[in-house]
Image 1 (cartoon, helix red, strand yellow):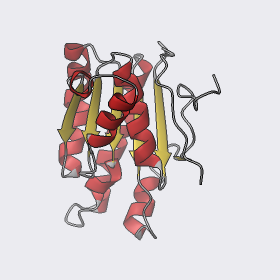
Image 2 (tube, rainbow, N blue to C red):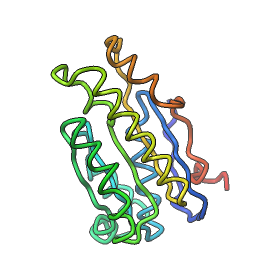
Image 3 (cartoon, rainbow, N blue to C red):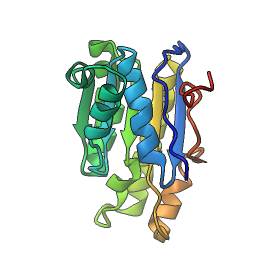
Image 4 (cartoon, rainbow, N blue to C red):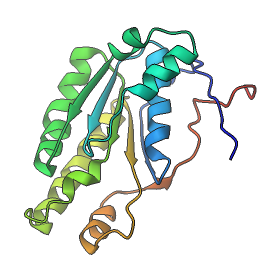
Length: 186
């Protein structure tokens, strides 16, 4: 498979978006998109629900493009959630105020559904929390913030996870992000 290099060319958009990507390439693509935003000087809030965030791809991208990894990473604000209750509180109560406080316009959420794998949380409660999260994300994106939710693929998701996935309005397979173009293609 041919490896693609991506330009970190600024293509700003003032319109908020809520995008879901899933699959094997969801996390690497989310890191490329995060690195591109940081390279443009933007602040990014990253919420990690699957303990899958790794700063090294961002640092490598910075070095590859002659940028300071330290300067880029100073614009990245990471918060981890280990339970669906923590993720719900982060998104529904704290995300909006933090975006305003930091002046950030971008949010990346990794492994949102991982926080819902706890079988001790009743299914009805988990579904209610996920619905609350989805409403909050839609409201925040309608205020002009761009939100990317990246879900790694689940091998044969359990029945509980399949039910939760139906609460998400749209999960699309990973595809190249429109604001990143492979080198030499504009």
